[in-house]
Every structure is written in C-alpha cells, then in structure tokens.
Length: 446
Image 1 (cartoon, one colour):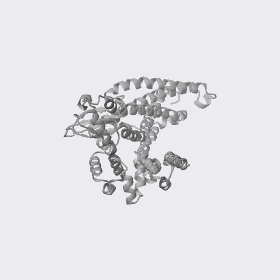
Image 2: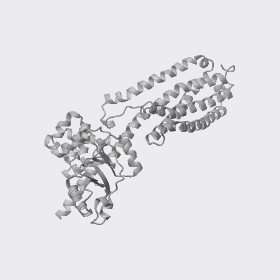
Image 3: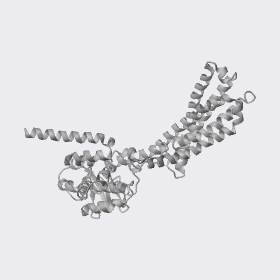
Image 4: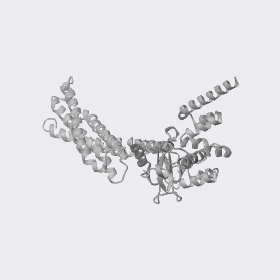
C-alpha cells in the first residue's frame, strides 16, 4: 500500500513538473520562482536542466549562495559558460568561485572563445580513447568515463599523447566489433572536424548536410578541444533564425524573450528602424509634390495611388524574403545573382500582368465607371494596368537584388527587410505611375 502511495506521489510530482514546463513562458518571474520552489528536488533538477539559459539565470540570480552553488554544479561546463555570458562578466568571478577546480578550468577555457563560435558552443567532456586499446578495454574505459567525465555519448575519439585527434568510432561500430580488435583497426581517420573559430551558422549547415550527432572541434595543431553536439547547434540555429526574422521585420534583434524586454528597450529596438523608414517615406510626399500639376488636372489618378504602391511594396517584400532565406540556406550564392535576376524578371512581368489585368477588368466593368473615372475610363484602366506591371517588376527586381548588394559590401542580407524594400518601392512606384500617366493621358486628361 505504501508503495502504491509513493508511486502516486511521484506521478503527481512528475505531472506538476510537466505542467509547469508547458506554462513556464506565460508565468511572471515571481510565479516561476514560487512554483519552482514547490517542486521536489528531483523534478526541480529535471526542470532546471530543461530551461533555456535566460530562465536559468533568472532563477539563480535570486538564489542564496549555497542554493546557487548546488544548481550551478548541475550544469555541464559549456552550459556554465553560457550562463556567465547571459548574466554578464560582473557575475563571472562569483559563478567560477562556486565550481570545482576541474570544471572551473574547463569553463575558463570555453569563455576564451566567442559565444557564437564552435569554441563557445563546444563541450570539453567527450569520450577519449587510445588507438592501441582493444575493443573490450575501450568499452570498460567508457563505462568509467561516462560516470563523471562525459556529458553526451555519441562517438568515441582516439587521441595520441598530445591530445591530437587520430580517429573516431561510433558506439554501434564499437559494440559490434570483435573484442580483441584494437581501436586503431576499426576507427575512421577521414574525420569531419571544425576549427574553434567557425561560426555557429556554418556549423548548423554542416549538421543539416551530414546528418551527424556531434562534430569534433580541432585547433590548427590538430589538438582536439571538444565536441559540438546537435542539441547545442539546434539552439544556435534557432537564435540565428530569430535574429534574421527580426531584421526582416525591420526590428533590431531582441536580446531576451518578448515579455522580458522593458518598454524602454522595446521602444529603442523598434524606434530606430521606424524613424529610418519614416524618413524614407517622406520622399513619397516629395514625389507627389513633383507631380502636383498632374494630380490637379486628373484627380482620378489619386484614387489608385494606394493600389499602385502597395502592389510594388508587396512584390518587393516577397522577393526580398525569398532571397534572404535562400542566401541563409546557401541555396544561392553571390555569383548566382544574374540567374536570380533572370528568374525575377520573368516572375515580375508575369505577376505584374496578372495584377494589372485584374485592375484593368475591374475599372472596365465597374458600375458608374464614367462618373467615377471620367469618360476616358479605358485610358485610365490602361494607365493603371501598365503602371502595375512596371511597379511590380521593379519591386521584384529591387527586392531580389538588394540582399545581394548588401552581402557584396559586407552587410547582413537580412537587413534588406520587407519594410525597407517596401519604402524604396513606394517612392519609385509613384514615379513610374505618374510617368506612365503622363504618357498615356497626355492631351486627354493631362
């Protein structure tokens, strides 16, 4: 009976932990701390290890010194390094003082690398083997290492006395090999490895292309420094994607979850881009002032201004988003700009003809068209149709080429955000519209 009650309590605690995990992001900081303290130690540890670094830092910052030490010592060295980078260098000495000497050395070494580089992502705890070991000896040795010195186990790495990487063997190959064989006989020497300075985005592409679970990090002398695992890169890829999405939306990258950003920070992150775009849109008023005579003579033209500029802005935003993502995924490279230009020329003309035809038919078939669009409604319809084709074509070309131009001069292609492209096309779209109108309606309405 007691065992049944104990099992029920454990199940209840586990359910509480799962519910808390699912609702964590919706809770206030005070609610999180309160509910976290209510969990039994085992469930609390499981939850703590599953949290993002930002949330771990939030819990630890409010803990006492003894409690803080117990939570920090749960983390692997690379996770401790991430925590220090999250909490800032002011917390570095305090956190390092809570670690055992070996972990402290490992964390200090990891902090020497950039946060978004292989060295900053790697774990220094991996399975080390000597190449002259037998398979049986290796398996026994791995059992010992797995207890204290290894964070994750995917592959075993054969190193020489100078810690230079000689070969790698998967656990499947290790356990299926004859017991008397040496590691030297079964290991692979053709190894995919990355330098400590490699950017996390490049590492992410390697994982997606090679279908690996871990990649060794090796310096210029061939010394193995650690491994980058798939879960480390998954988090990094998510951060990169979030950063690009923010830029595409015309927002400076947020440094914390949306609900954690202060109002001042939020205004600062969003206000800069909006002011730049607002100044850009002011050229729209300048363009309209330039064509003031045409507007005064043919007021009907003003009815279609929102239609024209939105068509160009939408097509430009589509094109820039597609090309930015294609560049990020390495589907297109800088040298492919002319191929992209050719495709977007055809795409822009086709899309422009479709939209322009819809506009033309709408004007021609609209009831009371003569009173709305004057007796020259057919010429007005032709003006709108041709203008839409021109503006959509210009929008697709601008949107697709701007990311290439930015990449060529060394800027992030994601800076060619949809709002930025739309602003550019708004101004030029008006010029195209009124130029077409001046040509078609000259001597009739103008």
